[in-house]
Length: 212
Image (tube, rainbow, N blue to C red; front, side, top):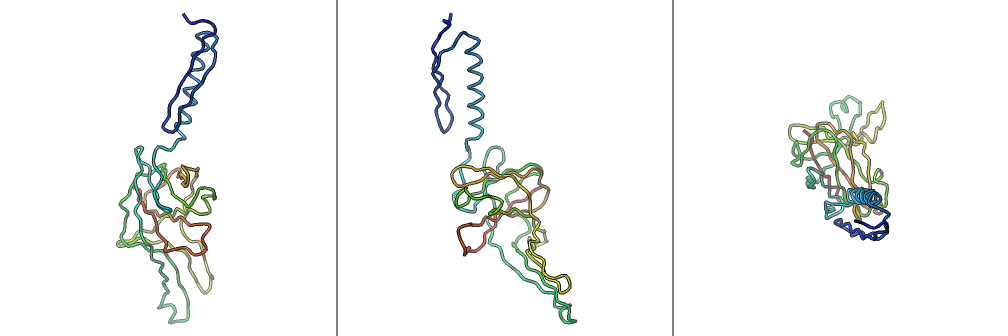
């Protein structure tokens, strides 16, 4: 039988660390309570420990599905401005600027509902809401489009016209965030990650995914 002052060393191992606890226990009941508490503590830490490697490069994204990270499609976007020539001929000016991606749908796909995505940034000290945009495309037969701005001679300039998605975020690893969308609907989506320290962005690359 265990003595009232049994000394026990408990060792718990996770992927990233080994935690050892050395103490004196007062009876079997005390031992069981402490073991359960330690187990819950370690389980909680394991849940917060990254199990999927961060994306390799800034701007890359991984869609989490079945415990694995699925790389999102990387597409070079085309900035396109379009004016209504017919209306211009009769003295009415109307134009719009939009992002265009060739091909109507992404290869990386998931199902409607809660979605988690790992996004690599230059670091994870900035507010992700300021540097990450998730938006929904308007799907065409041959391409996907997202309107940035529009101009109407009577209505004036309208900016930030993209259909942006709300998300929550937490730091992930050393330079990434894990983004969670509560209830995403069917459609085609894009993610743009900007560098808050750069005044001159390179060519814009969009990470794309689809929801069925």
